[in-house]
Amino acid sequence: MNNKNNKILYSAKSKGPINIALIKYWGKENENLITPLNNSISLTLDMNNFYTETNIEILLNNDKNNQKDIINLSINDIPSKITPRIIQVINKFKELKQDMQNDFYIFNIKSKNTFPIASGCASSASSMSSLVICLNKALQTHLSNTILSRIARLGSGSACRSIFGGIVEWEKEGNENSCAHQLYDENYWKLNVMLIIVNQKEKEISSSNGMKLSKETSDFLSYRINNIVPKHIKEIKESFIEKNFEKLGKIIMKDSNNFHSVCRDTFPTINYLTEESEFIIKIVDEINKNEKKIICAYTFDAGANGFIIFEENNKEKIENYFDKIIFNKNNENIKEEWIINLINKKNKEGKFINKVLFNLGKGPEIIE
Ligand code: 2P0
Image (cartoon, rainbow, N blue to C red; front, side):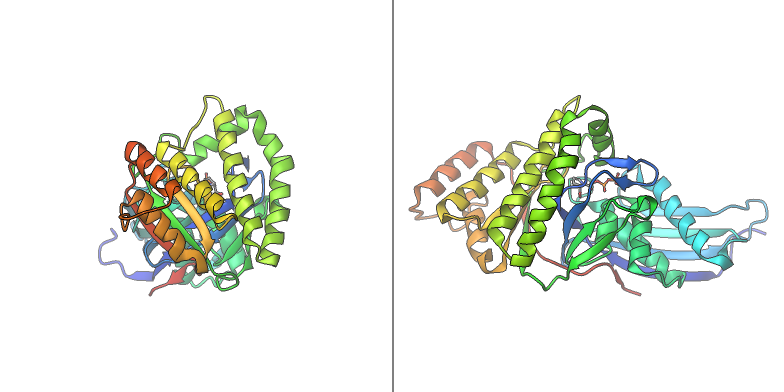
């Protein structure tokens, strides 16, 4: 008997959010278990523009000549690392669901991102968080967010943080039980994130390969893990308690700089930042200098796009600065010399594509 006329046993549809790390994860303790060398902290971003949608249908495989699980993936332009990890995630669910263990199934998985893949926008985090929530719903396993975070981690390290909304920490403690938890929900502190997209190309060195190479060759990495990250985690947590943006902004920028120094210290060296990224850093530094305090902070993942973090009450001001300087909006009759200088510099150095604004958001959602 083949699989024609098979009935759908389980189905669900979900959406998963991206997150941006403020204290970066870089380096695995265990490559297979995807356990991290250090704790990391991130913001989960709203799903108004950027998210991954997942659609799953599960059927019994009753083809007697082909008794195995069959996974049919229809995914827009997914990185190659993802396929074996999806199998690992599905196997974990099968392990946890007693009544599935004696049969084989067909998993039809459709996944669609609304944003450019592999350009430093954490697509594996949104896709894996969405997948895990979708399987939990379809199979009615009713697993807690903590368990879902552990399973999402097997799909992609940073995905374990996207299971939760707001401000999230992923703890390295626990080895195979390592997972994320929420520090504060999305309403605790009205922070905004502006993503400046400068480069839609797929990056040359994936995060997974980059962090492996850093672990093998960078002398800075162990210093970062033992000395820098613990200090940054302690200070960033204080900044959350105090809602002290100056303190928060400084740590965000220092941790981004530190992470990219580790990349440069890797051999052969890795440089995820481009001329445009350096220009974004310059703009943020100039804004803060002219405002005489830190009102915005930059952070860059394993890609050239800049994420600018600020408090919601400074949104208009900061958006306006960036519109004038890099998107040529409202930039007639400017009097401030520092802005004119930046605009002139930009005309030589800039290829800026777009900006996207985010609030902090909730974790993944079931749509159907
Ligand atoms: C982060 N990044 O904390 C860091 C900062 C990139 C720079 O997590 O191999 O796609 O799937 O665990 O999660 C990107 O790495 O790597 C990442 P895997 P992942 O967000």
